[in-house]
Image (cartoon, rainbow, N blue to C red; front, side, top):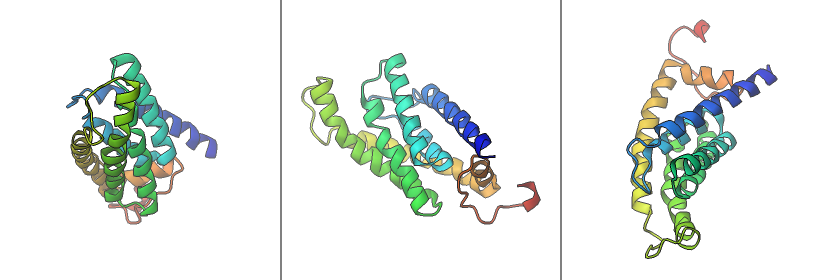
Length: 183
């Protein structure tokens, strides 16, 4: 069973990476990629903080290589993905905390970390420390609302817990809706 859940986790992460690369151009302008936040939160809730971090790194590298996205693809995703999973687990499965982790991690920490990367490594002149905060923050709010609605629907139907259990993760849905034998 343990080996099967590890394989399923890797397959799920591969699917999340593929979806993240494909849907990231939707609603995207430089410094604002709300669909990245959707993937970060969903991955953090389903797979946990470490898999979410790895997923964000892989998506960022692929987006930079294939789509010529600046390093914002990494600085804007990794902190939120990890913090989303950590806060979700620490809150014992509260989806609001997963969204809050993304907003703090990407919307604030990632935005602030983007300044030195874009200024000193990428060579962008004329930026300030707070340049990316409004864009990143709004993107995480938009993405957070979408992810919350999706995950809440999964949770209410009992599918979120079923997915988490099948992947060997702790499921926080204590009372699934419907017949327990279905799960």
